[in-house]
Image 1 (cartoon, rainbow, N blue to C red):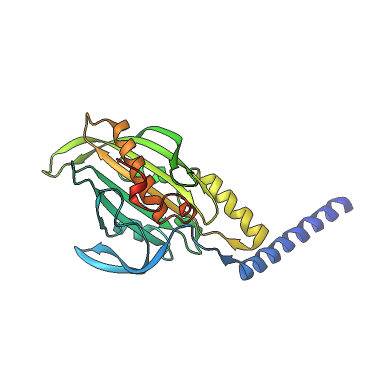
Image 2 (image 1 turned 60 degrees about the vertical axis):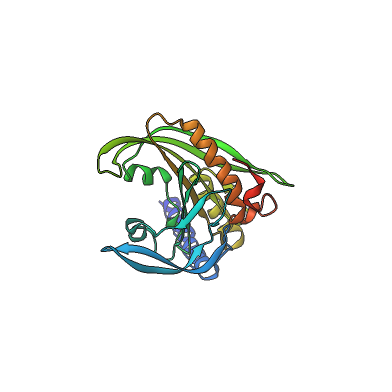
Length: 257
């Protein structure tokens, strides 16, 4: 009986010590620097067909990459409503002037609330896509010091309305990865593990960003060819806003389409 009481006392003492440690950690914890460039610029979503400002900082996605024409886009209302309010966003749409090939680029940067960084598959499923292939690949950014980006490449299909309002099947090529100021990975679990480890070891919560690119293909369009074009766009664009890549390519001329 005494041994049980002793064990219970030890457990309670450990629990109390853990609570005290967590409280002290929350008081001393500080946010690290983001791994993407952030600029002061108003960010909007669309509510009842009207623009509504939701922030004054945005991820600085490049206006120029290769020969693509690009525009800033509002943040989807459902995304803004779902994610924590201290989330910082970037959303830019790229169009090739040669043939109209389109790539949608989104970035979600966490603040103090780490739940901004979420499972990418949920985004696709919630958007009506069905995943047909999912694999880890690497994108090499050329330059004086070439850098490798570990990414996930997902192929998906979905039925949506086209510009004429007719429902038809589309194919999607989705590329994403996660980045902090010092680390990058294509696996959410790895990013969360590193985040927890760094908080315990240093008291610093790294600000992770979730970077994604989506190209939608009509049936019959070569998905491999679409991915290759996305890869070249990423090689040109990512070094302009991902701080780890600054020593590699720095403008759109380093990669050719």
